[in-house]
Image: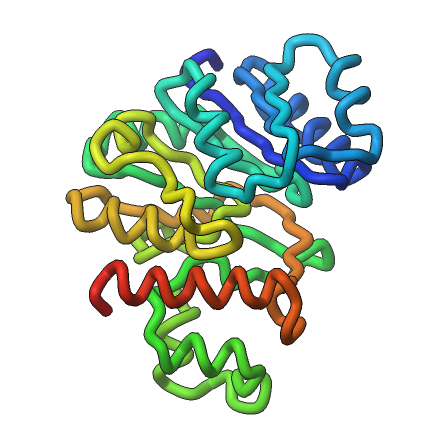
Length: 251
């Protein structure tokens, strides 16, 4: 499947990376595989050197998601690119059907699979574009007390059983047409932690591309909200990304 390049970025999560790469080899044995190592010190570097047939890019420090993925895109040869988190793994994927859909619907820029937690629960992986109220409701934890508030349900209720367009999809797994990057640019590297995926989908939509939810493809993901810990580095980085997104897009 030389039309497809799969890009995985990693940082000090060797065992999860092994599981991720194994799932790619099983589901997509002919895809070009690129791993971008964000300065790992846990044996990842040595492990990747031992694997044949993988393009290995090593960054000397943790440069963040956007910069690392852009480095992968720069090396990718495929007409289509899949981003997959190192703590995710592919369960079901008919890539031929997805590539056929891309070919038949030229305004499709991204396809996002159904994403599940390891215990089988559905992750809220495709959503409406955020509002400040929805972000506050989620970030403060109030959504746990009132998850059915109408404005919040509109924000997170894009999942379903049918193929349909959505506003944006989380970056745990995304399949993107290479031409999109030529039209709208690469990921914005000012987003170090979070919102680079939301920003990309916003720019795509403004350029006339659609983001499509594809529930027949299934990916498991060990989603962890690192930004939920108040006053952590991730919290401040995520908060900056929120501010940049809302001011940058005039929301």
